[in-house]
Length: 233
Image (cartoon, rainbow, N blue to C red):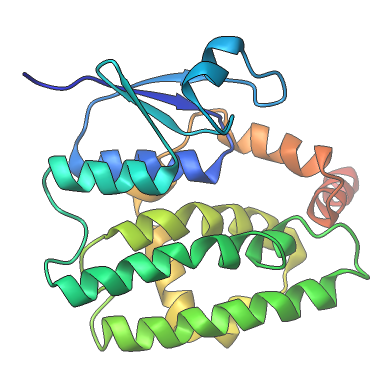
């Protein structure tokens, strides 16, 4: 029996996009229902124990947490995106586990959502610390191959980090920090991810507009600069 897949999503959520990238890379057909996370419906809270997206319904079963969803899909749907070698697979999982440290708190998201010019130097320094770790990881894991984390093929690490780099790239258009130039291996990796439609196309058609609203709602420096640029046109 062929499984049916239904994704419970939010338009701007990077963790949801991670699941979509994984399914796109595997050619999985799926339906989507979007929920407003500021007004969570009761039916959603019944199937999402933490009240978060994504939730992937596989037939009648509901899977939650993007890491668990990615691992499940990689077990049951070809092609396998994790490395075949057990050691390399474990190392990939470890770098996927680093994602919350990299993305949230004083990580890359703190730069994307930086609120003032005065906050920018500290946000940059915190992002540098985490980008430096990724630079070293890519040097060890990828060697001379490229352009993805493991080499020539998209993997689950790429699916995890791509959404965060895509959001940073939007803010970077106006922040213009040029921080990625300090990390050439990461920069090459990001360029590959943002040139791959499997990654950048894994969002709803309304993503750009909704993400701009998200930047506005959070009172970010990026939104302030975007507004100033629009007013000057």
